[in-house]
Image 1 (spheres, rainbow, N blue to C red):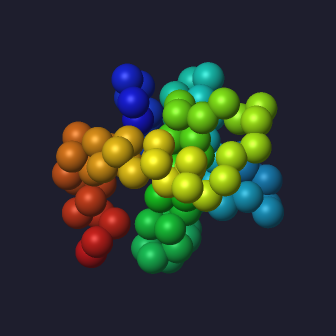
Image 2 (cartoon, rainbow, N blue to C red):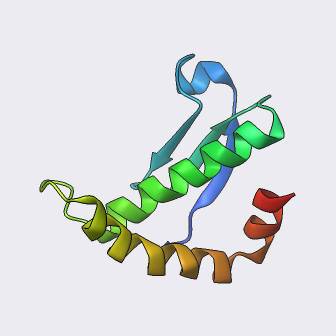
Length: 94
């Protein structure tokens, strides 16, 4: 995501808190996805956490942004993530 390489790890629910299905840790550059989720839900949560990583990279999160500002900065970075990670695209689309 941008200049950073994140690791994606599956974690037990107890490690994330029972309410959380995923987490993006920008300090350790890790994305955690809850174990034992159905594939479609794991795919959704992974993309959700990637978007958090993009927002942390692209936006000044101390300021409010409208949808257009978010889309303008998110689209090229998400496209880069997809180009750099063809195995991710394959996983998300199967």
